[in-house]
Every structure is written in structure tokens, then in C-alpha cells.
Image 1 (tube, helix red, strand yellow):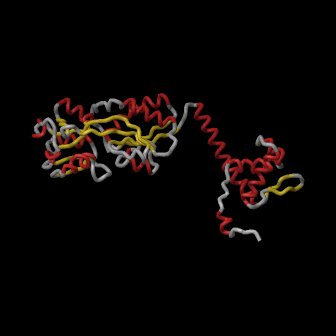
Image 2: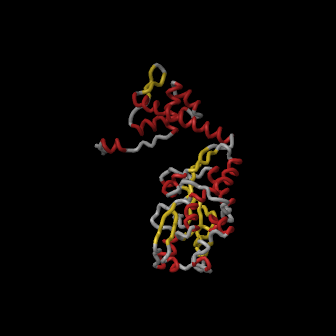
Image 3: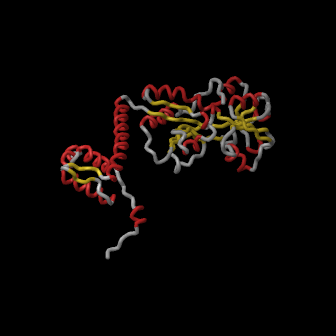
Length: 324
């Protein structure tokens, strides 16, 4: 007696149905016979018969019975036809839309966030240039993801994140944009204002004002102070650059900020920027996408434009008018 798999195993066996099978069932049902269905699918009748037998063998049940010279669906065939019509309608609609969008220059959405509110002033020039090439692509700024854009990216809430510092290039799709310098920012009257550079030990007795960020440690703490065994006397987190600037101007603390972010204050002398460590403290900025996904052409073009506009670093901020 031949070996028979238990019923539970036969039920669990994957069928691997695909669009070819759905189109086959729909064509035979709507044509009423194999000859007309074969012509509709550009198959020989023998090829169509072979595919139908193979499909019925996979399912383990006939899909059609012959009645009055017509192919009539069985109950199982009816179920498959209902699904086939819904799926094929969606696929055909998608194909038409994609063809129309391609002919019209492409359409889509890119959801974007950076990890710092000050960085959003980079975007208008880039988005303006991008929309000249891709007028039907909507660039949406998702400001609520600023606190942790990489997590929002991996959760599917973003398509593109602009971040600085260390990134997991094995886990993420990363494109290098530029490198900037972070400097110790002090009021002109502060004792550190005349230093050639600031050593980590010099910050031990200071009130350090840093950005509010998702992680418990900023790059300044993680890469400079903690390795030197230094903890600032007081640490305050503030969300906005403009607020940090005003606190430092008033002598209520010092900060570490990108030189480009405080360029107007450095020019007018209201703040002083001093290199952090003798070698300076630099960080690299990245455009980050989800890994293992095909990047749409328009999204890749936006990344390219970011790289082009920021290749020498961001233009200095004219004024800080950013709000939470």
C-alpha cells in the first residue's frame, strides 16, 4: 500500500499560486472553453491544458467540469475565480497607473526628517530644485520624527532620514553628504573664549547645554567627555538652537554646536566658537534609507541633490526662526 501523508500535512503544503494561475482560471471561466482561453493567453491549447492539470494537481481538486460543451466552474474554481478577479483588477490598475505616471514624469511621495530642527533650513533650496525635475512627487517633512529619525525610518514612518555621526552601514542604506565641525560655544566674556582649543577636562566645571535627543548620550558625551572620564558640573537638554544660543549669550551656560549653525553670531561677535580638542571634533552627515529595498528613481535623485547642495557643508544660517 503506498505511503500516504497525514491529512494535516497535506493541508499544510504550500500551493504557491501566482498571477499566471489566476489569469488561467479567469480566462477559461470567462471564455467558456480552453480553445478561446488559449488564444486569449497566447498559449497553445495543449500548453493551457497542461497548466490547468498541473494547477488542479497542486490544489487536489478539479476546478472545471464539462457541461454542454462548456467548461463550468466547480465550487473550488468559483472561489479561485472570485479572488482572481479582485487581484487581477488591482494589478491591472497598478500597471496602468505606473505607465501613466512614467509618461507624466513620475509621481510619488518622499517622507523626510532630520535629527535636528536647525537642519530643516537646508531643505528649501534642495526641494525647490527637486520639484523642477519631479513636479508630481510630494516631499513631506515629518517634523515629529526629528527626535529619532532612524527608528521612524525602520518603523516605516519615513522614507529618508538625514542623520549625523555613527550609523550602522550594514543595517541601513547610507549615502555620505558632508562633514562638519562642532565647536564649544561661549559668550565673549567667558574664560574659555580666549583658548586656542578646549580640552575635555576644561568642561568638568561647566554648565553644558546640549540638544534634546532620543538617545541618552550625545556624540559629545559619548565620543569626547566619557572616554576622558569627564562629567560636566551640570547638563541641560534644550530642543531648539535659538534657545541654546540665547542661554549661552546670557552667560547661563556653554554649548557644543555645529559651526555653520552659529555662523551669524560668530560674525557679529555675540558668540565665540572654540575647537573642541586640539584636533577638533568633526562628524559626518548621512542620507539614510531602509536597507534591502529598491529605491525609487525620484528618491535617489533627492539624495543626489542633497549631496550636491551640501557637498561643501550647509550654508550658514541667516537667522534662527525654528519652532518646535
